[in-house]
Amino acid sequence: MTDFLWDALLAIAGVLVILWVLKGKLRQREGRHADFRTLANELGLQFNATHMGLREGQAEPPEHAALRSAAVGRAGLQALAAMPLSSQSSIEGSFDGVHVSITLQQTNSHGAGAHATLLSAHMPRPPGLTSLAMCRSYAVDRLLTRATGGQDIQLGDTAFDEQVQVRGAPPEAVRTWLASADVRQRVAQYLTDFDTGSIDEHGVHLQLAGAATDSARVRTALQAMAALSKALTRA
Image 1 (cartoon, rainbow, N blue to C red):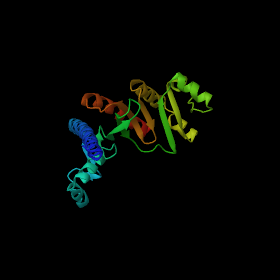
Image 2 (image 1 turned 180 degrees about the horizontal axis):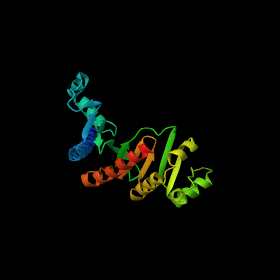
Image 3 (image 1 turned 90 degrees about the vertical axis):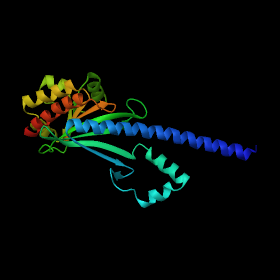
Image 4 (image 1 turned 60 degrees about the horizontal axis):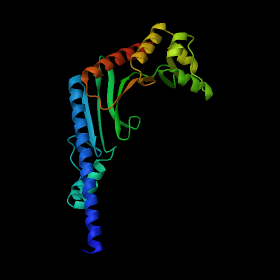
């Protein structure tokens, strides 16, 4: 057998291996989307999905159909379909009177190719604030802030200032918004109960490792987030 034929066979084998891997990734993605759809139904929320820029049920464009008629074109479409950003799914709707959203994101914090689920309970931008970021405060964070010359906003509430890292602009507007001891207590309690939670000018957020499919767990988190969003909206 000539060197050319060996090279051709190796190339074909390589393509087949790549296609096999891509099909495996597509099956995994389809499984995650099916779980997300079930989660949406159990929560009474709307499931949304797009694939290769197309909404569910949307007709395939003619150029895709033309590509599928050739082996190289099919391989190319499969490769594109397996790309991380080619397929997106989300959940949204009203939960306990608050607009919420749930999205599945790729993250490197739990290993290459890992996923995280981001829950958000949205709220109107607080009056007078241009930016806001609140999360749980740890001793190492406070040391790093001091070492780098950073400055967290202090509220004059020792317990709160120790528990919660607050940044935002303008600082006086943030202090006015958080003037209520009840609001500060609710914020601190949320960030204690959900240590991967955060709050910004757009709402209350929580990141869960992996693709969250436990509807009871997600429901409990959304209830706490919606309640806090309402309290912050009234602040």
